[in-house]
Length: 309
Image (cartoon, rainbow, N blue to C red):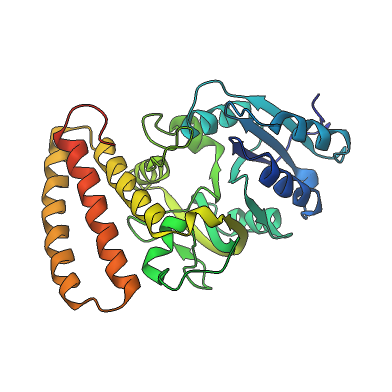
């Protein structure tokens, strides 16, 4: 069953999900309360879940507002990039908004993105703040420098263009339709099932910046992002950094890219060695261990055949 609206939506909200029915339910529960929801459609892309995700969406469809579409599609090719690309294919809106299945947007979320594209007609993509919603207490070792791998994003309270090599995050990002019609997410990068591969968002946004496209940070575009207890361990964050390094290696397909990345690894190794001598607090020491894990992941990916994991 699909709840449909009579007019073409301005915004397509895509939620990709895999075996997180309970968290998805919380996200869907928040969406009808958003301002300008009558200008949006919601597309849930189920990436081969084995839990009751389909039943959760079907239950919401029975009581969904008639002014907005709620659709359910199933993407059989495993991987977040496949799921996002499927959502793009299904979308009808002028702007494609991606929302994580464990993120709760503020009520003015849609209104903020409409106003942002009105203020910045040159914008090809926008992103905003992502606040953490911890399942348990925040660990003392989780220092500011370790926040980005947890998708904790706060670049201040002023609207601005994203600086080079810093991009919107998938839990809270919006792209113009014409952008995703020419550039899709790379399917060799990004999460697949329970793996921690990443890099698909950076790859896409780097392409946009390289082509001269503008990306804007909009602090009023806010979501609260759930961080489960099992991720709040030193073992998890080190593994996350390792696979971030693997993702960097996989993203460097050409020979010159690989050589450049090897040079960067050498520079990073020198920096980490020097910083480790000065590190005294637990969080700082952990950060340097994570950086070494990332370097190791990249090195193995560039120099070994087969699975670097």
